Image: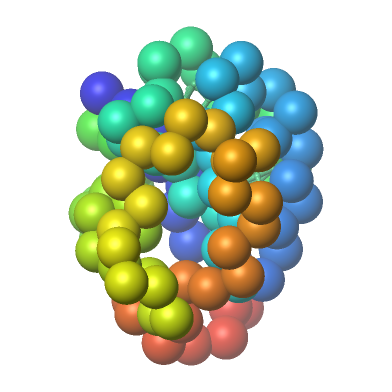
Length: 113
Ligand code: F3S
Ligand code: F3S
């Protein structure tokens, strides 16, 4: 039951969540951040840290944002643009640094607001 970052993070990327994660499983894309469902230990620390309430447990994501539950997984399971392999579980974002690219879904997401 991992936590998920949804639509409000797009183009905001406050990054406060990163500092709260004990296992460093929040990875930075181009327009938003993504939680690795294979590495998240469901501690819940990140949820209150986000000023725009982008983070919630996967089963609590608002219905109109359900695609983000799948999309957080896709970020790690399908090779990102410019990469030959999927990220999988790289053992923490310290090992990858900011990725600077997004899933197709987020890259093509309209401007917020
Ligand atoms: Fe995004 Fe909120 Fe983290 S805006 S980067 S989910 S603190
Ligand atoms: Fe990190 Fe998951 Fe906790 S993203 S802060 S381990 S809920």
